[in-house]
Image (cartoon, rainbow, N blue to C red):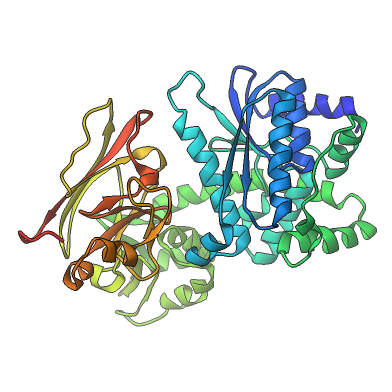
Length: 457
């Protein structure tokens, strides 16, 4: 593909998938590598309105700061704004018990989301986040998902658009991008860790795919074609599965029931069981045991972290776990009220137009922009941390309790509310600074806690 062809293909791909228009303000995640550099130049040539964002993970010594400096200069060269964040990624990965790659991904997308949310409602509101994933990345992702056993959803690969993320280079191969950069005489930086094969993606990129290409030269193109077909198949499958589950599952308040005999007579009964139970925390590794449960005696059950599947005569009955069994309470929906061990908690999402924030310690006001349901209400545990309101650095709850001179009894009675793995409120004590209400807040999540006794937790 020539330089001109890549630019034409870029425009056609954007239009074909309705990714964005020239009226939209875009945020581009930029590493300094060839893919994101080419993406920025294509956007600049196409006269799109965009800004750049770079994350320095501080994992590669001076090389990390070299990349940051390069990205700043690229933004200056193209005449676009750039936002840069630095993180101690190893420290974050250790605290969250994550791999370095997963930790870096979480930090990167949290930073991008913060930039977008901070501008909502302003004249410079950012409409979409752009990443530079291309066809080779997609082929690697499909293979990784195949080897991990992620099922049909994983084999569709990377989608051109998902929520507010757009990937306008998915049509182009790595060779197309390299040829374009050479013809345009572009410069970029190389990440030395890409040559290491200790990470799964690098192992595929450096070893497996080149071996496959020796036997099947068009393997990347073929995998991408298959992924597109599987995406269409998945959409049909999910629509049919939704109709089947609507007919099969009886819902009674918090319970769901499936008649065992009727389920057994259906084609694809294992897939139906998985699609019913997977959203409630049951894993693919439990499926064999769950199928066996249908043959067991009444009263037998299997638990997920949040739910229980019980054999009751001729029915499979799904119920939320009792609080005592799970230690976790799901908070579902934009408004609700529950009673738990320490008191009564109410919550609701509502519009916000600058009203004074409640100073009552038993009220928690949260910017609703980043809240994802269901939220979790649970007792605090060792290793928990958050960013106390007014602080830009994280603090472990154990240290927070010491600094605030909480008694042992007070610590034992402390519960937290969590959304997408992040603590948003240490109940009746402090909200997380990342979820504070600001001048750009448009909706708030209001909590009100009423302790069962007159003593504060």
